[in-house]
Image (cartoon, one colour):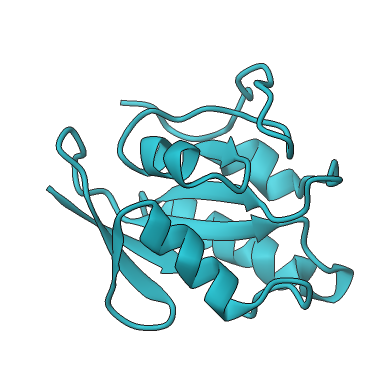
Length: 137
């Protein structure tokens, strides 16, 4: 089943759009536009996904918090991707409403989008599952 993906923009200044496109292409996702992609997930349910790169620059934090709460309220899954291996700061909204948190790794991203969510540190190590405020069916 096709799962629609949307990337929250603007991207952090330290991340180039071609780098994001390469990550998504390497994860076997198909570009629809610069910010919209699609994943062909065998076991997926087609629930839309909002992809967010973390950490977030301070001036963009309020917009991120609003986008995450809006997406979660609309039933979308929110998946955060660490773009900096030295990162440790995670926005509260990701902690509260995130479906997954993955390292900059195409396989981990594909698994998270297609229904195998995990919580990873920026280096790819496993973290305890987050106690989120998301509704679970």
